[in-house]
Amino acid sequence: MPHNRPTILLADDDPTIADSLAPFLERAGFHVLVVSDGVGALEKAQAHRPELIILDVLMPRMDGRETLRRLRKANLWTPTILLTQVGAASERALALEEGADDYLNKPFDPHELLARIRAVLRRARPGERSLSAAWLLTAHDLTLDRRARRVTLSGKTLELTPKAYAVLEHLMTHPDEAVTRERLLDVVWGWEYPAGTRTVDTRMAELRRALNDDPAEPRFIETIPGEGYRFIAPVHGEG
Amino acid sequence: MPFLIGLILSALVGVLLPTIYPVLSSVDFGTVAFVFGVTIRNSSVVAFFFGFIVTAAVLAVYYWDRRRTAQAQTMYADYLQDTNQKRRNFLRRLDHEIKNPLTGLRAALVNLQEARENEERARAVTNAGRALERLTRLLTDLRKLSDLEERTIERFPVDVPDLLEDVVTAVKILPVCKGREISVLIPKVPSPFPTIIGDRDLLVLAVYNLVENALKFTSVEDSIEVRALEDGRAIAIEVADSGTGIPAEDVSKIFEELYRGSNARSTEGSGLGLALVHRIVTLHRGGVGVRSSQAEPRGTVFTMRLPRN
Image 1 (cartoon, each protein chain N blue to C red):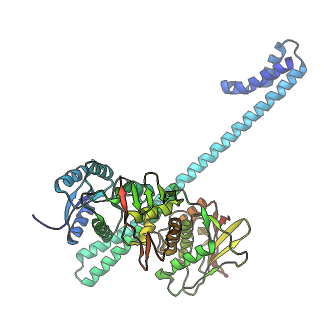
Image 2 (image 1 turned 180 degrees about the horizontal axis):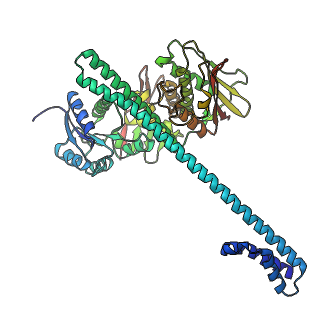
Image 3 (image 1 turned 120 degrees about the vertical axis):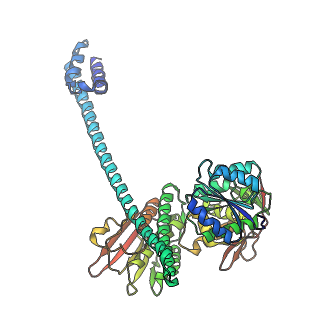
């Protein structure tokens, strides 16, 4: 059946999840292909070239991570969202290291998934490696080496706390995107956190001090009143 | 010379014999030492007595050590039993906490399927949503607890007055806080107030949980106070309320995971809030306690004691 809707490949072994999410995404204007394991996902991804892939991490035959690794190895840079099981920070870091464009912790609100899908599709540059999969991110004289977890400004290494690093990494992999405080709290903690806006603002102040960025005339991070923050410098990814 | 040899031999026998031949440990080591002592050329009484004393000392140490090991073993067995008991309690409570919202969810789905009236269907959806919210909250808090088991925490100076203000600002957004007054008391002298070394986000979460807890167990007429004190060594952060108080039999258990006091059965919450507070304060090498009275003047005071910078 010919269609001009973007195709999403959804891989989840739990039929109740796949059966409920597929019609939801169809209603949102996507064409959805459903598979129940990693091997199927790999085959369908190569045969149908979907615009986006949603992979559950825990699946029989081949788990989501391994599937993603193989996709990337085959030079398939289809934007991918991983559905992670555990909120642990290590799990999230792993998801991004393996080249996922975004991740979502189960259980999630389907609307949240839709928002992530749209954001990932908006950022995607067809056929190209996404910033989330790049090892080295550069913006002006700022570089973030994700392998060494090192940030340098004009060649000088910056001392950042792990949380400030996580915030900067998220902003740099989502340039030109309005990122809410709640999302940043989730990036740092991986769980719902009582919305102490100041908690994020304190972290941001620390980051701006380190980056020598003036909030009134920002080079890197812009405040969007009532909404959150946006990384405004153009980001270039390598490796 | 014989004295020295007697000494070494008896000491050796004292140390080695119980290790090599535990069966022989009941043999009188003094006699053994004496036998060794007299077989040596020019043996003397001094050598024998000295050997005897050393052997006795070695034996005393040996038996003392054995008793200590036995004590440690008993303590370990108690600890295991306690841990097992806690685990059983936890599973039993978890079962209960999951069962309730699941039953609600099931009933709501049946209503949704069978109800004809739109109003009834809408109510079923609301109820299903509420049950889901409860399960999600439980899961989120469980995740927080397990996350804190493995996470290393940040250690930076934390401004206490700023932290308390932040918590109160965050709490005020809650619907339950509508029309409520929460006062923050911070001493003006010494100024600035000493800092705590720790993870600001986690400390915010701990105080937030205590204030949220206080809101749950008080009515609009009651007052809630958040205050900081210091005594040179530690900083105490207190959350006090004039609510109905905690029943005496519950006080010692409220920091346990998923424990619900007799007056907390019907309140919303995951049952993990205070366990999280306990965990966070312990990670900061502090302690948390509670004093509460149901008789006049009634009320509850939670105290987090944290080492000052």
